[in-house]
Amino acid sequence: MTADLLERVDEVGDGRPGSLGVVLRRHPKTGQRHVDRLVWGLLPHDTRDPRTAPRPLHARAETVASLPIFADAFRHRRAIVPVDEIQQRNTRQVGGPARYAPPGGTGGPWPSPGLWEGYRGPDGEVIRTYADACQA
Image (cartoon, rainbow, N blue to C red; front, side, top):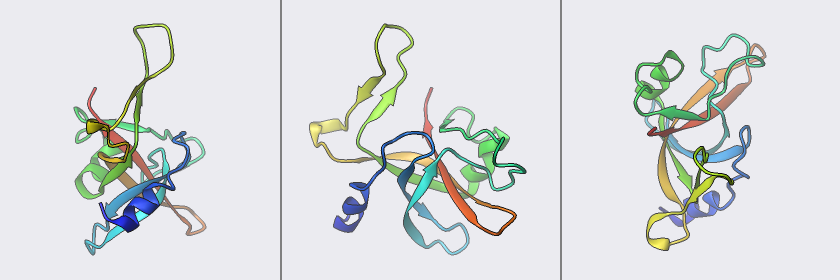
């Protein structure tokens, strides 16, 4: 990763749903690369009412190509999401989520796959959102 990118990654939000996260993406028409802060929680571009639409945080690798909510983004709008830790819900034991740090103990971010979308509201404002891609 470049020094400029690492500076932006250091500005990553708090990791809560609806917060801003750093996303490396490529424009689907021009191929130009962007490093932007997008809202975590995918809002598909064809959403009718964003107030009531589901906003998934994760897209399962097993179904990302076939589920309508993810399929178009999977084909055209893939991304890399730099993360410094992954939290996984703990369903088998008492306690909080299990936390995983980058391999090798570097303490720095590592790339995680993701999808992004651009939703254009009735007022013309574009809201860019993303979801992490993961394996169940």
